[in-house]
Image (cartoon, rainbow, N blue to C red; front, side, top):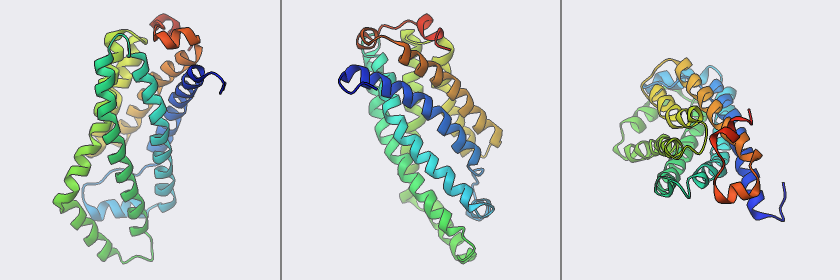
Length: 231
């Protein structure tokens, strides 16, 4: 990466972050235990392999860090043709990211709650109080802004024809489908499939960004055909 050229550096960071984000999200979803609505069931699921739960959430936090330059790179592609959608998606993305990071922090607490040394009855009671607390509702509502941001930026990419159509569609719909599947207690394969689909979309875009010239990046004028040639 060329630190002497700020534009080139931002482009390279964005492209690499998109590709790395795809890999990390798939790995995190594969490791993550199935989401359970009841506190007792969730703690039991985590207790089956606490190390795996911990590793999954280290990857989640890594993914959130990578998501920042990746998402900013996508918004950059919209700055001329669909600037409003690009700006709105960023406004939605930031609180969603913060809320998701806070939720991941709570999952590390759950990792300790599921340890063999913990009193299971007391931990289940704590989990139930958290689930029933009105104060937790705004946090989980804000978490939903994260998939909404990807939906908005994906729509912008589709309307702008800034990337291959299939890549824009996959970026737009994969995160909402994945979150809906997880939160509704759907099959684990749905959540994993959603992240794999997202990976196909964003890796295509990331490779295309890396293939852009500095002039194309600054003009945000790379065509879908140019990006398609990258894969």
